[in-house]
Length: 396
Image (cartoon, helix red, strand yellow):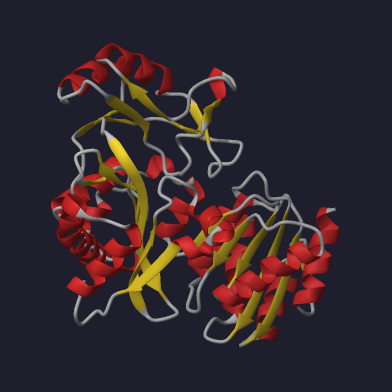
């Protein structure tokens, strides 16, 4: 689960991280009052969408010469003008795709005098089985580009979970940044605070880009991106309350209600599979034969008939889907349960696109018989390769 920048900063502030004062708004009429709450005279008006690259993004409605989704304002009046222009319009960034995202929230924040921009993130480093800091002096930039072009500028510091962030860890991170004076002193409290926030709230990613050294020598979290481990949200009702469903795909929201692992993609062949590995292999082979998957959908190992039917309905609700491939290897999941769910869903919502089903494993003969006797236009496949070729050919 992702949250907005302003929410992430409030969470980090609760752990003692230094953040600027700011006010979130949802209408232009709130902009003047929000700006007047801040010290000024410099303000930053920030689009709040779940996508990166906001500063370099462009608003669809405002043309290619329009300013981006993060703007400086040198007066309250200029902040109001920016808010009026940005709210309700569609921001297109490198991460949103051409469709963009409508800006329904802004964060008006007090400006900062920046001396240096740094990159800092925390994530689970699976190569060592620990939470790690990933740091670089190249803040404010696309970290993937830094990793590709100058990997030597990225330093990873893995944290011993038994010891937490030690003085030695702080010194190593500070040395990587070249911090001294007030900034080095601030680091002694900031990096342990970020680690505590990450572990206490079961975050999957905490990214501060940029972490700045201000002209007065102190550190400040200038931007913050936070994602939570969805499997741990049951422990954090306060974090669940921050969820903004308007930023999520409606199909993914429906899927989460059924505890389905579903991710919407850009292709036109819907996939319903059991098991993440098999789902990825299914998507790969669809691409091999020249088409693109419309989704990742793992119904899991113990799905009920109702859950399977729900998954099928979610897939068919996508107007981009021109064909559906059901690929089930029955171990814990029984093939007859899958067949019953598919038949029930098709009878309820209809079948307007080609459907290819490959079943193998537990109760496979019964599952095939249910499909064959359903009277529905379902194409059977012998194996995954056969299934992929048949669905691609049907869509073509």
